[in-house]
Structure formats: C-alpha cells, structure tokens
Image (cartoon, rainbow, N blue to C red; front, side, top):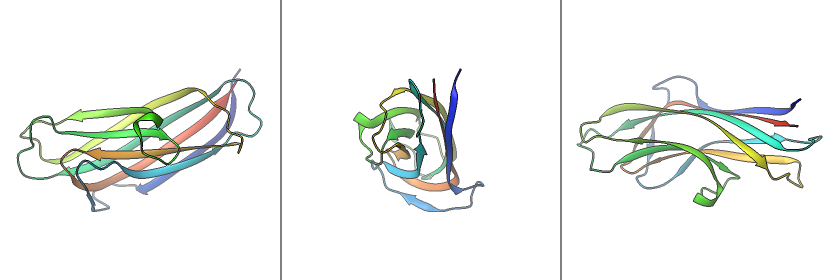
Length: 145
C-alpha cells in the first residue's frame, strides 16, 4: 500500500490573462519550483505532477517547425538530462493568440535524496518567443511503497 509523503503547489497566476511576461525565444524559463519532503519514505519513491501554462503567441506567421513546450525537470537546472517529462505543442504557421499547455506525468524509481527533499521545476519553452499570459500552476505529490 502506498504511503503519502508530501504535496506542494507553486502558482504564479491563477487566471488567464492575469500576467504579461515576455518569453525569450529558444530559452527555457522556469515558471514553478517545488520541494517535497520525503522523510520517512519506505521502498520506491514516486512523484506525480500536473502543470498548466498559457502563452500568447506573436501575431506574425509562425515559422515552420515552431513549438512551445511545458516540461518538468528534477532540480532547478533546466537541462535535458534532468527531464522527467514534457508536452510539446507543434505550431502551424497560422497559429496566433493564447495557447494553453497542460501536463500530467509521473516520476518513478526516484533516487532517495540525502537531504530528504526532492526538488522539481516546471519550465516553459517557445521556439518563437511570446508572452506568458497565465494561468501558471505546478502541483506535485510524493509517495513511497
């Protein structure tokens, strides 16, 4: 039977259109960080995540191969090697306006941290830039066997 350990939420914006923050093209940007206390864990560690972010795209036609990405990474360093999971939205040349990305993923067989704290980040990436528009929210829960 699973044992609940901790849950945390990081929220920048709870409604659509509540923020307006420029998003640099080709630059992963952390929009949420959570630290989960896993003291007392027994056996395998598992973490479940959900996240949402909205990006207002530039009005110009989008170049071929353009994407926006919402990703969860272990720790606070936004590198491919730390990737837990992501959702990728390919863009059409005619795409404009606000695009909303949602993800629900899990991290299994998580290495037990000597600090008793697991840290995860939610990041957004756009190959074409745009504006972070809200909502932005990141939720994580940790369990063990």
